[in-house]
Image (cartoon, rainbow, N blue to C red; front, side):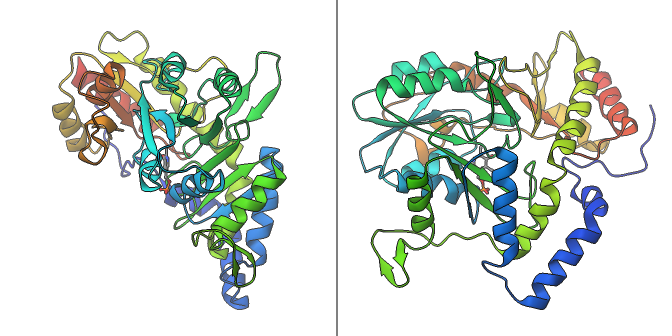
Length: 379
Ligand SMILES: *Cc1c(COP(=O)(O)O)cnc(C)c1O
C-alpha cells in the first residue's frame, strides 16, 4: 500500500484559498481601508453577481442558512399551528426553525437511492393545516421539484427550497427547461458556511425569490422588521452578510462551476472504483438534476461502520456520518406523531451511510490512497 505525504481532509479550504489569495486578500484589505464592514459595496456586488449566476430576480443576503430559512417562514406569515412538511433525513437546521416559530414540523421519509424527499410521502402528509413544503436538496442534487411544485399548486402550498448543500445544481423540467436549484420554489434558502460548496470565511447565507413583493418583505424581516428607518411594522430579526464575507464569496462565485467539475471528477473516480461492490453502494444520480457533490455518500452493507471509520482514521483517512440520528429520534424533535420504525429508509440510511473526503482539491494520488485502503478494509 502506498503512503501519502499530505494530510487528507474532508474539506481542503487551504488549497482552494491559495488559488484565489491575491483577489481575496486585496478585497479584504479594501474593506479594512474603507471600514465599510457592514453594507459595503462588496455586499451589493456579490448580490448582483449571484442574481445573474442563478438567473433569479432577487437575492437577499443574510447571516447564515438557518436564518435564511427562518426569515423565509416569517415573510410568508406562517403562524403557530401551521404544518410544514420536510424530510426526516436532513441537517437539523431545516426542522429547527419550523419548531422555533411554533409551526409544526411534519417529517416524511426520503428515497433510498437519491436521499431526496419522497413525493408520495409528502402527498400523504398533506392536511388542511399544511402551509408549506421544505424540500432539501441533500448532498448536492435537487429533489424532484417538478412533482413538488405540482403538489404545491394543487394544494395551494408554499415551497421553500433548502439549497444549503446544492448551490449551482441545475434542475431540468420534463419540457427541457432548466433552472438553478433554489429558484424554482416560492423561496430558496442557502448557506455560505465555510465547508459548503460556496463557502465564505465565517458565517453567511442568502434567500432567493422571483417575487418582487416577497423580496421586499424578506428584506424588511431580515432588518428588524423596519420599513422606514426606525419604523417597525412587523416582527423581524437582525441578519446581515458582512462585507468581508461578500468579498470572499464574490471571488469564489466566479469559480463555482469549476469547483463543481472538480467535485464531479472525484465522484467519478469513487464511482468507478466501488462499482458493483457487494458491500458498497455508490450514490445514485437523480433523473432531472445535475449533482454538485456537497457530499459523496456511500451506503455500506454488512460492514461494521464504527470499526471501519476507526481503521480509516488510523490510516489518515477521515470519513463522516451525515447523519447518524434521524430527526424523529432526536430528543428535541420527538413527537407523538412518530415512533421508531416510521421512517424505515431514513433509519436505515442513518445506520449505513458514510461520507468520504470531497472537495475541490482532490488529486488522483489521494483518491487512490483512499479507495485502495477502503477496499482493503471492507473486503
Ligand atoms: C448547512 C445547512 C443549513 C444551515 O446553514 P447554516 O449557515 O449553518 O446556518 C441548513 N440546511 C442544510 C441542509 C444545511 O446543510
